[in-house]
Each structure stands twice: as structure tokens, then as C-alpha cells.
Image (cartoon, rainbow over all chains, first blue to last red; front, side, top):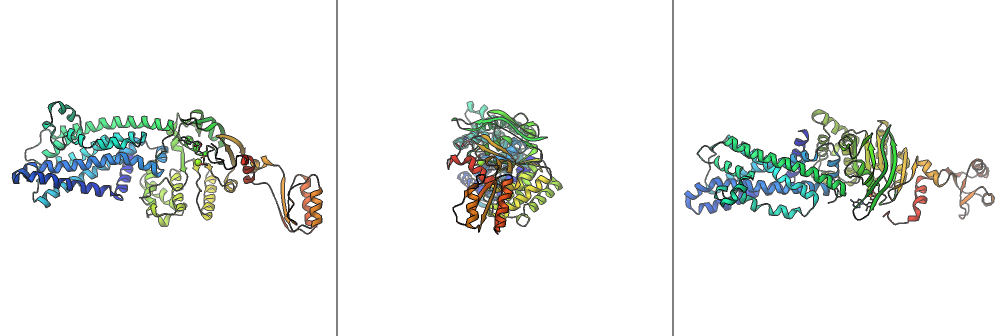
Length: 258
Length: 311
Ligand SMILES: Nc1ncnc2c1ncn2[C@@H]1O[C@H](COP(=O)(O)OP(=O)(O)OP(=O)(O)O)[C@@H](O)[C@H]1O
Ligand SMILES: [Mg+2]
């Protein structure tokens, strides 16, 4: 736990001194402007109807992008700095260090959500009411954690090969579609829906949108449980993969390569 | 008790490169042990294996009796590593933030952590710059921070790969004091260096490596003694007649007698005394008597290789 928190703090300290946070904070409101502009083409009614989606989607997109970035960057940068060997040589388990650093993206999720919400109010004059203020923050944090473990699955790949960047790049838009970020999973072709349901983002996106609607969300805690459970599964797979790959690079001698 | 040992340790890389070839040595607890050898001799590879970040392809190694492969988790708790140079720290963070992170990785927290970090900053002379970004540090300061990082867990065994490369002479001398302190604390230190004078000054024993294997091992003076067991005398302001007399003696080896009133000789046993008497009686005051240095032994043992790296 100590290691987890220290790694989380490290990541926040590093992020504060880089363009990352700025980028994530800019990305969400800019996307929100695009989505809200499209929504307002349908007049005030359109804006009101689509605002929840137009606020949730940019937040999740910024969160996911920044998580993918962190997953690739944390190990690649550590190697370039000559820090990675020392992390591995320390008694702290590498998966915990990585998880701690990934969890820092939760902060990006919170900032991104707040800034898209503000954009709707300040730019479009439409203040979306948070109808379920208890569920919203919990859902955002759960989403952040599940994002951390899911995007963290990429890190072992980066340890194996720097060309993992191509994989990283392809994991954005298809994932937004499958994860019901842009349109709810229920609007996807029928054969795609089960796949979408396996992606934690689809549960998060639905739930986050629901917190901005007047009707009480159905079974919010169970749905949160699904988000966390899917995140937990990703974390188990990620840990196994990472330990496996760590063994491979210790054998091949490529651990300290950049 | 043995702190670090390797037995038949071998490491080959894909493509056939062989960095260690049946390397065998032992470092007793509390010893400061130097690893010397040309570029590519396998020093860093050995340090990596001992610190568990690289697996050997043959043989075995252990730290405080724990196998570095089978019992890596245990080894990681007892070893502090510094992998050379001014890298190995986060430039975007301050010195203190860096040490806080590493201390936490080694299981420290709360007050113990803060105190430990303060002690290390003090010990490495960084207290005044503790809250500055490391990016703005000079190379030597980064190195000191890196060294502090290796000490953060207060480990019984330290592995330092070229800790002084690029340090200014003052910092390098302070480093010697630091190593002496570590030895006084009873810690075992394994350090690689290209500075034979440094090895001579701080190491109880040294191992000369070549092509991944041990070339010689022992105290710096005994390793120096491998190339010659002779005493070394150099003198200047020597009258020509005395020079002639010395050159004529069969048991005296003249290393350099061409420089007019300067001579450099090798002698042994009683002859050393006789030669010294002769010189002093002739009124020679500029006189140095010594043993060949580790540097000389190193050069003689490895000279044939020339500038070529080890592989
Ligand atoms: N990861 C690796 N993959 C392939 N070859 C390697 C690897 N690491 C080291 N080698 C090779 O192993 C040999 C020993 O390298 P090593 O870094 O241990 O030497 P060294 O004694 O530390 O040299 P230096 O004094 O230059 O630091 C070299 O020939 C090097 O090219
Ligand atoms: Mg080296």
C-alpha cells in the first residue's frame, strides 16, 4: 500500500511538471465544444438531450488517452532515465509500482469531467444538473481505477518492444465505440453488444450519463461493482503478464535497453 | 561470513556475445572490493546479475548466502545499487522528492522516512539544494544524489558501478571518505572503477577482470606485486659516478638510467638497503622508494590488449 501510494504520488509529481496534465485538461473541453456544437444544431432541445453524452464522452476520452500514454510512458521513460533497473532491483513489486502510477490518471478523469461540465455551462450557457451527486464521484473514481488497470495491460508490451506504440495508437477510437463512449452500447449492432459489455467503459459511460439525468439510475451500485470487477480482472491479467515479461527481459538482457 | 560470491558465473547474450565466463570470486562481509578491467570486461554485467536485474546463463551467485536467481526477493532487500553515472534519478523532481520515492519503495514511511532522507541529503552534501529540480544539478551533484539513492535502504551490501566517473577531484575524495564510513559501519561494498588510484585508496581487495573472467585477485599491493616483487627506487641529482656504480651492479635492475643524474631502479631484499645507503652517502636527497602501483600492474597485465575493448 505504501509503495502504491508513493508511486501514485510520484506520477502526480512527474505529471505536474510535464505537458501531460495540460494536454488532458485541454482535450476534454475542446472535445466538449465540438460535441456540444453538434448537439446544439438540434436547437435548445437537442442541446438539453445530448448534453450528458457531450460531457461524459470527452471526459472518458481524455481519461483513456492519458491512461494509454502513462502506460507506455512510465516504463519507457524510466528506462531512458536509467531508473528502471533500480526500480526492479528494489524490494517493491513492479506491478504495484506500475499500478500506483496508473492510478494517478484518476485525477485526470476528475479534472476532465469538471472541465467538460464547465464548458457546457460557460460556453453554451447550459448548466447540466448533477442529479445524483452521490453516485457521480464514486463512479468517476471507480472508472479511473478500472481505466488504470485496463490501460496498464499495455505496459508489459512496452517492456518487450518500443513498437508497442502502434498498438497504443489503435486502441483509441475502436475502444471508444466498443466502450459506448460516443454512443451507448445499446445503439451498436447487435452482434457487437456482448463485446461492448465486456469493456468496463461501456458500464462507466452509461452510469455517468445516468447521473446527469433526472431519473434515478437503476442498480447503480451493482453497475459500479461490474466496473470494478472488470477492472480487477484486468489487474490480475496485467500483473501476470508483467511478471512474465519481466522474467523474459531479465533472461534476454534487454531490461535496461531503451 | 561471505557477503557476495560467484561460482562459475557465466552470461552469454543472443548473438553469441559472452560477457562473463566462469567467473568465480568471493567477497567477505565488511570488505570493500574493487572490480577493475577494460571496457567490456564484464563488470557491469556482474553488477547486474548480483542485483537481480539480469539472469545468469550459467553458474551461480549469491548475496549473504541467498541465491540471486532463486531468492531474488531476499537479495533485493539486502542490496543497494548504483548503476553508474549521473542517470538513475528523476530529473523533473527535486532531490528530496526522488529520495522520498526510493525510500518508500524500500518500505520506509512517516518519520523514519523523513529522517533517513534528511540524513542522506546531509551525508552527500545536498541539503542546501534538496528542494531544487534535479535537472538543474551539475553532473557530480546528480551522481551524489544517485549514490544517496543507493544508500536509502541502509543496505548491508552495496553494489556501485562506476560511482565516481565524472566527479570532480574534491567530490571523488569525499566519495572515498564516504566509502570509508560505509566500511566502518560494517557494510560490504563492491565497486567498479577505472581509477586504479581510487581502487588502491579505498579497496581492501581488488579483482582484475578480463574477458569475463578473473585475471588476478587480492589486496591492491599483492595484485601490484604480481607483476614484480621488487622495491622501486627513483632518485634525481645523482652524481655520474654513483649512477655508473649502480648500473654496474648485477642485482639492480635499471628501469631508467638515461636521464643524466636521474635513475629509476628495481631492487629487492638487502640490496634495497645497500642502494639507499649508497645514494644517501652520495648526498642524494631527492629520493623516492616505493612499490609498483596498482596502475602499473594493471597496465602490465592488460597492456597487450592495447586500445581494443574486451570484446
Ligand atoms: N544486454 C546486452 N546484450 C548484448 N551484449 C551485452 C549486453 N550487455 C553487455 N553486453 C556485452 O557484454 C560485454 C561486457 O559488457 P559490460 O557492460 O559488462 O562491460 P564493462 O566491464 O562494464 O565495461 P565498461 O568498463 O565499458 O563499463 C560487452 O562485450 C558488451 O557488449
Ligand atoms: Mg560498465
